[in-house]
Length: 260
Image (cartoon, rainbow, N blue to C red; front, side):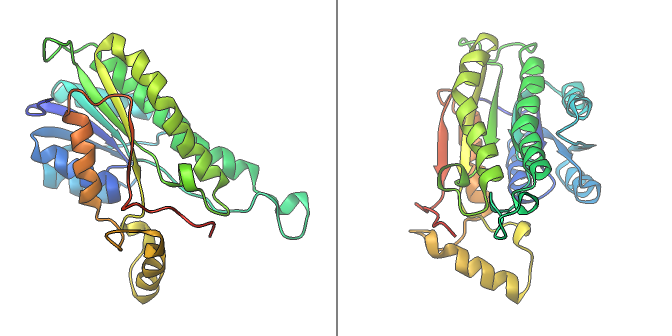
């Protein structure tokens, strides 16, 4: 098992939601967590609570990612990375009026891929480079571990989710080749595939609760949205289990999404 005591970790998108839950679990295990996020208010508050550090990070900016990784390395050996930064955008591929102007906005498609897929890969390559320079922690030569966040939309994409599903499908597909690449530097990588989780993205209030109640129709058991910490515990297992590598793991209550 990878011991996280007196190590550092970077969590992109770590200021809220699934990233926040992961950051909290990492801190409980003794890691100094660098919250790499655009939300300064929430990020600073969470970092202060956890005894970590906030670094304002746009994952489409390589220099921001480098700054977050260098901050982590400056505190303690960097052993873990969790990539939770991501956005969604819903639009049908072809518009209802049959014009090119109403088709899926190409700039929006590119932005989703830039953040969810390219930004994830950029964080992986920068963090893994830093991990590879650290001393090994065991006789196997292990130096660190990475978990990326995908989505069940990568398998069960709904109407309007072409960009989001493509971006998350890319995250799934690159897991094994990256695991093979990173073996040379003693770093493992796994991908966790969240189902429908109750996070701040759905908002609050009666309308939000009604929407979430509708979402759970696709969840087999337990018939509810997941709790963020239920995903975070799986992320911790993938990070610390020394024999978990190159896997894509669904955590979704056996949900399979309907077309809409």
